[in-house]
Amino acid sequence: MKETFYKGAAGNLSLHLVTLSLAALAANATTVASDGLPIGTQITGVRIINEALGTGTELTVQVVDHSGGEKDLTVFDTASAGNASEFVKPVYIGDEGPSDLVVKNTGSAAATGEVIIELEYRYKGY
Image 1: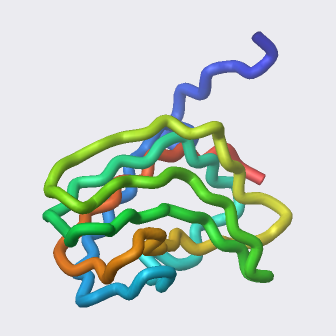
Image 2: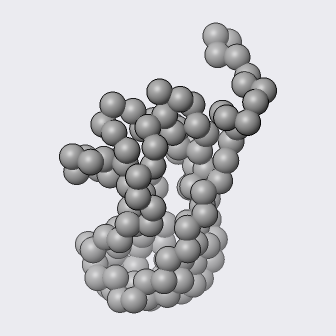
Image 3: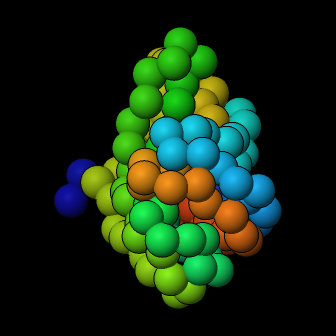
């Protein structure tokens, strides 16, 4: 193992919580959950806790950089209430600059209700 374990405050695994109240988020529409995720952040997982958002709804959690480049982290079926989590291949925010955490309705119907997104990350540094 070439990378040593960091024993200080920076570099520890952290959880960023965002609560969204969606009011008829149309199919293929997006909303910014958190803007300006800093350079040096490495995303390792995503969790969701949601109300039933409606039949035909599905949310995709994405990272979008300042030039509009999108990286899908994971997709959640949100037709019924529940919670789920996904480990993701680590996504590093680097040279593309600060990025936004975006939620996109990739389902076929409008999504309405409360959603809590929990972004698991560690600050790796730049």
